[in-house]
Figure 1: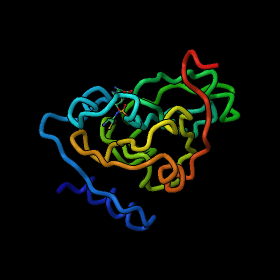
Figure 2: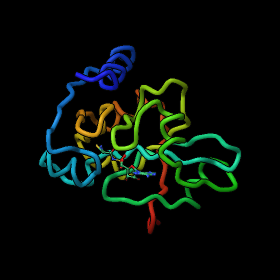
Figure 3: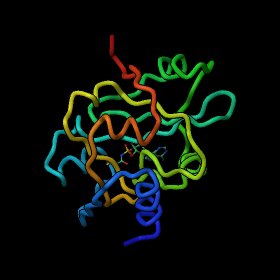
Figure 4: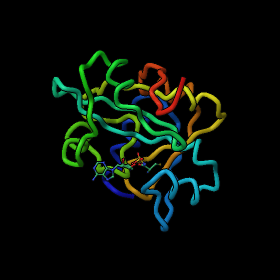
Amino acid sequence: MSKAIDRFLDAAAVLNHDVEVRRFPEGTKTAEDAARAIGCDVAQIVKSLVFMADDGSPVLALTSGANRVDTDRLASIAGARSVRRANPEEARAATGFAVGGTPPFGHPDPVRTFLDRDLLAHDEVWAAAGTPDAVFRTDPSELERVTGAEIADFKEGGG
Ligand code: 5CA
């Protein structure tokens, strides 16, 4: 295993989330890569996307792989004037993990987290488990529980 995956597994154990990490040598760095490797719909992939609010605080948007984040909507939901995509250094500082492997929970300090409502349509969803070749399966209600996320609508083009 890797140290990043071990940190993820430790966090899952603390939260009582029984997870099995699956690793794919071909890589699961993007939602498309992950869906191809797993053999699921890209909409079932949970992207863990870090944004920075204008006050400097990070915001985590757990976004369906089929969707893009509307930053104006995310800012409004987060009560910020604006949010912008974090750069890789900011994302790592906020979550403790590198982009492409960022898990939805297990961060050194809690990050304010929003969960894309579209993910609730699926019985099972898959998210990164610490590295760009590792994923785990969960379900939306368990994901909501362990992340403490607020369910929200922030996709581009959504109603
Ligand atoms: N392992 C998959 C899902 S299981 C995963 O982590 N997908 S992801 O969407 O959450 O992470 C990949 C994302 O990292 C890309 O969509 C992109 O938004 C972000 N990313 C990649 N490179 C950069 C970069 N240079 N700056 C900011 N974000 C980046």
